[in-house]
Length: 429
View 1 (tube, one colour):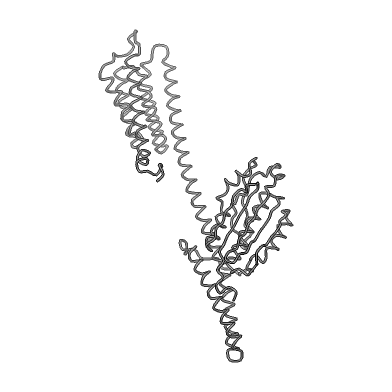
View 2 (tube, rainbow, N blue to C red; view 1 turned 180 degrees about the horizontal axis):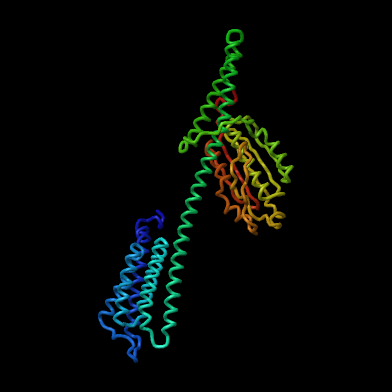
């Protein structure tokens, strides 16, 4: 078990705020009582220190332990005790800090209308204490408590607004992430629908063929039945994968429309030519014995290559890029790597691939605005590695039990790697 996860450590972390509050209250009380006991008063400006003065100071500072739980109540209690302290004519300076801290807490934890009224009441109490100032510095004392009250209220109100803004931004980010995931799942459902429609069409045609030649050409009819079985198996597998990825948001309907042409690695050359025409030189290497992939896996691999090349085009124009596809007996591996584009980095394109692309229809995903100019392209890519585009690619890989990594390459540049297992049972049929 990690030390940070130990129950005793968790209890200590939970108790730390209370310990800090207690230490602050006791420390403030000690300082204020020391000032009260040791401050010289040869002219007799203030009432002689007695037990009641120490009791009132204790009533001012000790309740500050609860200031975060009951901010308004603590401020009212502190104000009443300080007002009594000033009315009795004790040395006024030791009590001021307690009122200011209580006011800051109210401004930081309560709505502005409440904190404004509390600030006005606090200022009146502190102005009442300025009558105890030494002769000749009364106006200075009035100015000091007015400025101090204003500063404490402004600081507390700013802390509250910052905390509210942070909370709203966090909620907005969570909502955007949720919408992005839902949109990606809808897009995946649409593409899987096209794959299912393909299999159903094959089944329909082969069923008609088998029925037509069932008596006249039994071998052909048997081959048609084998194809029907294989297509049905593939269609069922695709439907199960779709239900897994959409199980949390299954109520979201897929958009209706005319199914476009199903993409796959067979169209990789067309994609490379299109990207090359836009100014990104791409080398393609296919190793191993190529074979026809299941439509869903073929589409997944194509989309990952497309997304990676789109990010290169958006964020590292003119970077030399290599696409490698390796076939093994039981999996297909795809790697897209660029060389870092030193020229573009020097020209101000130092931000790495943001991987913040939104999925668009037909796979043309926009990469989103990249990070600002900077000398460290690797850091920029790492900072942007949690965008919607990378999330979409990872979800695609997870549907087919694959893995996807996107990280800076050791020798420079950026690399996206995909590994997807390929079930071969009944596939060759």
